[in-house]
Image (cartoon, rainbow, N blue to C red; front, side, top):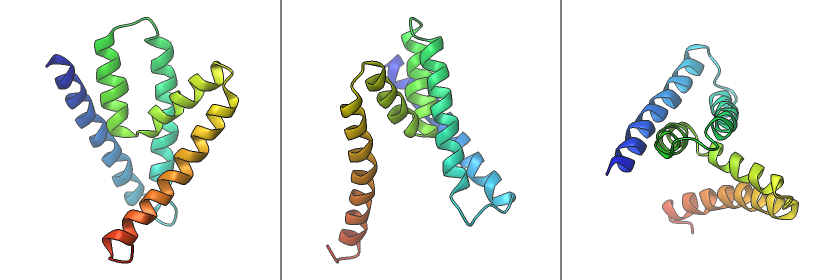
Length: 122
């Protein structure tokens, strides 16, 4: 139960932070390009790297709160980033490339398919 609470509280904080970045982008007039999403993904990737380094041998509770919760609510791209880095660190270059390609192309394709299905064209 404590694990679920840590993830939930962290997730809420991460989602609020993501909303804040989006709101800031709107206030700054940055609407022609997805700057807020790009910023969130880059910040989240960097933060996940910091967290993975700092908590390599650290508290599982802090990993749940910050890694799964806060960063998961802020951006799942951070989880994707650490997955790719771990594959690369294990010299699994082909697996990392495959994972990147399938994740990005697959997610875009799945989104497109969902849109078509929801509009009755699928």
